[in-house]
Length: 357
Image 1 (cartoon, rainbow, N blue to C red):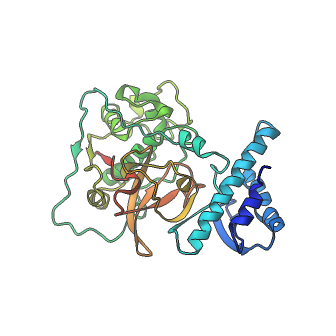
Image 2: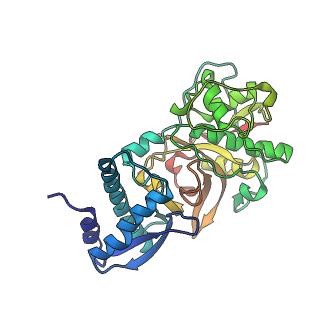
Image 3: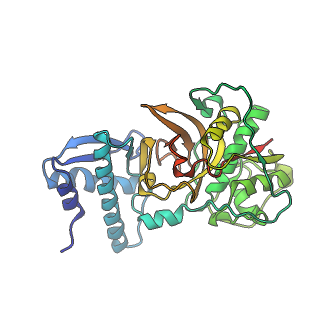
């Protein structure tokens, strides 16, 4: 007999404490409230049933058939069960972060991993194939906390959608910060140009790429604004126009591999830094708040590019403030606090770089 996910969830929690996900003022599903639930019928009525319908509305989900919807609903229920289990541990103080429903909650772990594997550090034989190495400044007292959003260096959270272009968003994010530092103007730059036009530098559009190679492309050709060359989440013929270039870099800098202290110095003294991480875990998929620590995270094999825009400490836990490119409906309004000084957790310091302007 096939076990109903609702019955499984009910049997897991002795006192049956369920995470009831409710619609926020913005229509999103990422606030967690703890309720005592006395029966399986209450769980079904107050969480699974309503949350599934709200999930479809909030994330504009449509399915090709009733069979497809039933399949996705079962995946959603299974993900809800994992959210319940994790958040019960968070409530008890056993976890430092909590999870919530988002646009990925009807996807299997395998589908999520395949969708978000856009970082591809492949070196290719092109002119000027090396970046310089970051040299920390002498006698600088690092601030206790840094948040470059407060200084105007960071554009709003963007959405790469179903395209493995995370590398392009990470690259533009770092360049946007450096360009702001130089000009005093915050301009959103074109990820689509990098997706369409940088294949000669080893990048593969929606199939993956590397920020370092993006910086080398921009050094040679420059980059247009997002407004002039808008994002469409798929590869197309290159439409670059030199006359519309608004930013360039003169080179790139890489930070010592795996060195979180060097990364901290770079974030504090330079600005937002491009990095890559292991984002393949269900805990990352459903992250909603707190300081993310995942024991299963790989520090050497990474698959997703993001942007470190600051660092700090929360409830005694050091963290990196990281901007993702999965829209504001993911995480903490598009951001995640990732554990810092935890042995290069998730490989956050393994491929750190930024452009020179």
